Image (cartoon, rainbow, N blue to C red; front, side, top):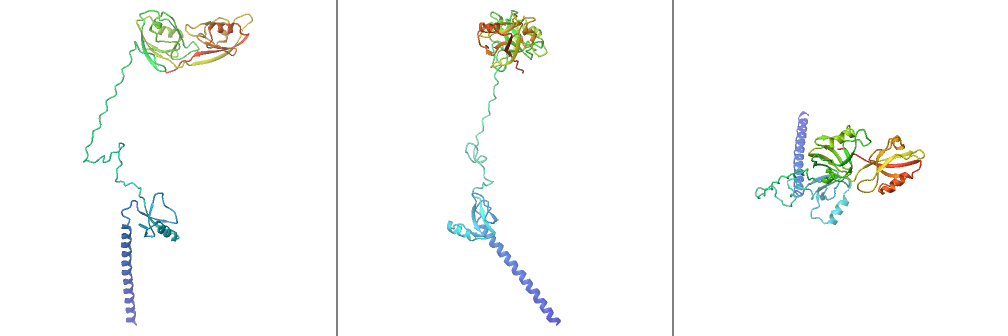
Length: 331
């Protein structure tokens, strides 16, 4: 009994060892077959297996095999039939023919390849010439450019400059500049022929105009009797204005109190002064240098001086007046 049991045990061990050996041989055979099968697609880019349920492909992918059955050199009808016969989970071997090889180098912008090929001579790129900065314009002759600061130098020769200015902390035009209201004929500024009405002077002979300066201080700073005036001038193009509309009530038989002036050049009229105690002076919202824009709703901004004067004289006891006031442009 003991001998028989021992024989059976030995037979069982021998059977298990044989089974294990044959299983190992079978796995190796399957692995070699799989490796040989994969070698069939070695020449294709981006080969991979996808386990799908009738989905999972990208546009442009090429199907190489279905469940390891190669479709290479198979007709379209045969490949379609093979796909139709599959059911459930399907393993597709696919490749991406359009995938770029990381080792490949793209051509440069000129279309030349072999950019880093040591066997090809390289043409050195020319060193760009340094950009030469334009020399600053001569302030004695520099033209004033619109919408930018321009430094000019005027040969004053201690003569009368001959221009009227607006601005100052004690006026209704307050800001870091003086505005040119008029340029009088035969003065130094008129002879120089560069500064125009509406130009804004930001500094003069190294003194910067600021909003805390009174009108008298600004005039003393700019209207100097010196051999030369060096100024920074800003010319807004188009000229910018603030619009102010007021309603004045005058007493019977009394004027509104607006003493208007005809500009040296062009049409229109601006306020020269306000009569003391008049409706315009008491109101306090109008000042010297304001241009009359409309009277009782009638546009007279570009009208001739006589038309504007008549409109003001014939106005009612309650008169709506709109004016345009130069607007200082800050730096």
